[in-house]
Length: 90
Image (cartoon, rainbow, N blue to C red; front, top):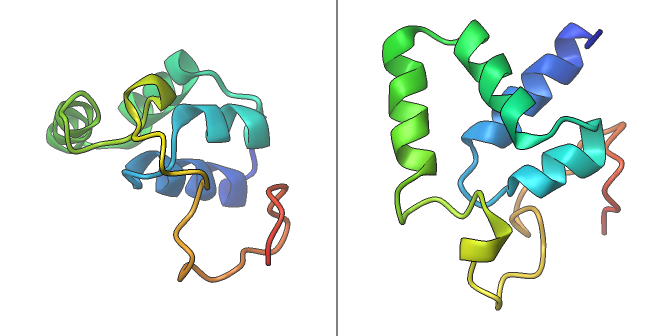
């Protein structure tokens, strides 16, 4: 069972275009299908549909296979460090 804080972080990561599903799997152990279920259950239908459309568009980098190979990090260099984050910080 996820805490409210973990749920918020997963949803935030799912909305971020540059954060791949593999990063969510690495950090929280949730595969893409589970993230989709989580988003479907916690968003309004229109918000979920907008999110899915964006994830499946060319704008999003949610899948590592579609991602530009020049991008080598999970987060923006300007993003503040998050305490309890398993991904190493600078």
